[in-house]
Each structure stands twice: as C-alpha cells, then as structure tokens.
Amino acid sequence: MSTTSSGHTAPTGAAPATTPSHPTETSTPAEGSGEHPARRPRLEVIVASTRPGRVGRVIANWFIGQAEQHGGFDIHVSDLAELNLPLLDEPEHPVLRRYTKPHTLEWSATIDAADAIVFVTPEYNHSFTAPLKNALDYLSKEWRDKPAAFVSYGGISSGTRAVYALRPVVSVLGMMAINSAVAIPTRTHITPDKQFTSDPGLEASAKAVLDDLARLSPAFANLRAVK
Image (cartoon, rainbow, N blue to C red; front, side, top):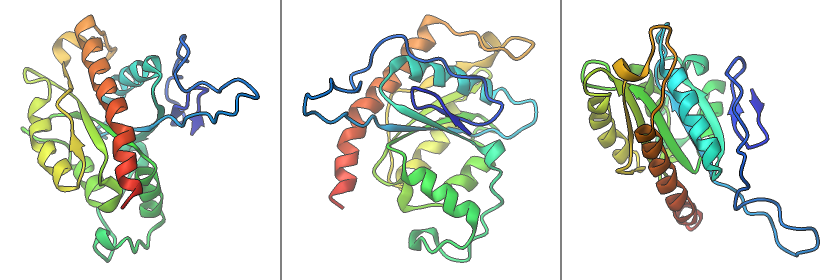
C-alpha cells in the first residue's frame, strides 16, 4: 500500500488519488508559534464487493476523490477483495479480543485506528454482501463508538435496501449510522465500459456525508478516550 500526501492509503494498483487544491484547517502551524498540528480524523473506506467485474472499486475511488477534496480526513481504504478474509475462523468470541490469526490481528488494528467508517456496498437480494457481514463479525469492540455512513449502489433502488439491512448490524456493533448517505443508481452513472459519471446531486450528497462525519468524529474520539 502507498500513502498520498493527503493521507489516503491506496492499495497497490489503485488509481492515484488527487491532492486537494485548497489548504485544510489542519495544516502545520507556523514555526515558533507554539501550536501543535491538529490530527485529522482517520476515515476508513470499506469496499464491500468482491465479485469479479464489480464496479464497487470505481465508485469507491470516486468517493475517495470527494473526501480528498473535502480535506477533513486522513483516508485509509480496505478493499475486501484484496483483504480476502477467510470465513470467520477465530476460536473465541471477538468481544474477548484473544485473536490467534495474523489476518484478524491486522484487521483489528485497521479498524481500531479508524475514527469514522464509510461502507461502499452494492445490493444483493435486498441485502448487503456476505464478505462485508463476515468482515463485521470478525471484530466487536473495534467498531464501537464510531460514526458510520453508507455509499450504496444498484439498480432501481440504488442499493438502499442493502443499507436498510446494514443499519441494524452497524447499530448493534455500537456504531452510530448517520442519516446522510449517497445512493447511486448504476443505470445512469455507470457507463458500458464501467466508468463512473458523477453529477452535482451525488457530489452534494457526498459532501453532506463527509461534513457530518467530520463534525461527529472528534466527539466520538473523546467518548472512546474516557472509556
């Protein structure tokens, strides 16, 4: 993986992210000012589809670009197709955090480090993907007290039924699912050669998601710190 100057960690082979053209509020203070640079919240973008021929990574890359332009986060991407977690294979309940497998320890550290989470998910049979459910079930406390949002995509419903199924799972794991969301109808936004076309409405939705996550992330970080 590689990290861009704006904090986005991209898996090998992913399209490079663009650096925001505007300064952020967390730029390094002037030398001698006595101030410490503020840490930007870490945004974990989870790509839920693992299907060959998927468009999920294309959509995720678009959202990552929106987050880069927003400038409020350090961005890390977990593509479940690349992560390739096996079906849950830990002998003990995840709430105990007595993990025995290297892939679980790595996944635990990744989610532990996150301040906010965005799930990029398609809709399969009125629900979300099996690899995403498996990835969620691997962990417990690592998800707790973090704001979460959804970028869904699909046919006529734009993947919203996947989000309806996902919200109670996210809630029982202790995350706070925000109301702002991005719902993408693939018929009008994915070209025959699987390129993504945006529009002002989707970009406004992405900004609303990012604004809400940026507002909530520090409060939840403080909550985690006192526990």
